[in-house]
Image 1 (spheres, one colour):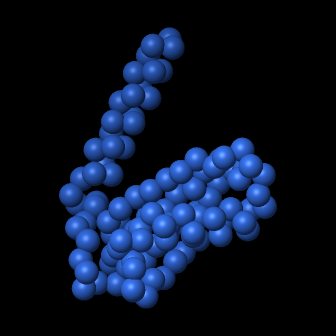
Image 2 (cartoon, rainbow, N blue to C red):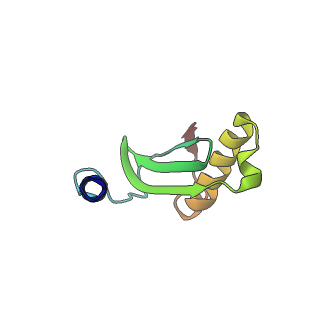
Length: 101
C-alpha cells in the first residue's frame, strides 16, 4: 500500500512540475511591461511570484529558520516581501513595483 501511495505522490509532483513550466503558464520577462510581485508566508515557509499581465515569470520559495518560525505572522509577511525583493532584484531594480501579500 505504501509503495502505491508513494507512486501516486511522485506522479502528482511530476504533473505539477510539468504544469508550472508549461509555456502557456510561464511567460518570458518583458522589460517594457509592469511588474507585480505576489508573496505570502506560512508557518514554515515563504513564497513569491513575479508576474507580468497576470502571468508568472518566475517563482521563488524558502523555508523559514527555527527562529523565523517564531516571528509574529505580520513579521513573516514583511519578511516575505523583503525576500521577494531580494530574490527578484535584477527584475525590479529601478522600477515601480506593486506587491500583494
